Length: 148
Image 1 (cartoon, rainbow, N blue to C red):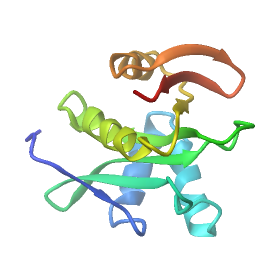
Image 2 (spheres, one colour):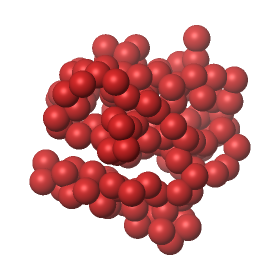
Image 3 (cartoon, rainbow, N blue to C red):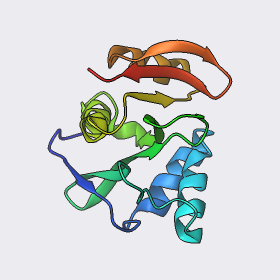
Image 4 (cartoon, helix red, strand yellow):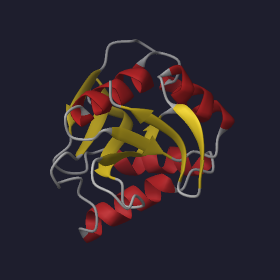
């Protein structure tokens, strides 16, 4: 896959989201279903202060998506949560995932003192550790990264 890509804020679900959702489902990842269902119902549009939904595109093709919310599982202010990060399998190991997460973390700077996430995948856990997250034992999170 050609490494040329762009990351843009999403104001609406882009063309290609259903294909990306189907790709995720074939890998057993259902969180993309949640993203689409919650967006379409209005339950989560990543629109509160400090929140963002980003898409990565190669030419016009959506190849990755990821969001940042105020952590709905945290009982305190200033905690963000990476949500619904998915990179199409054919686009992995090309820097797209890292660029997407770094842009979300830059968005979190000055808004959230820490960012948490939950993953069930060993591959994803290793990926997040490589980006400066550390594993935690928490009922609602597997990894956290504190602001720099």
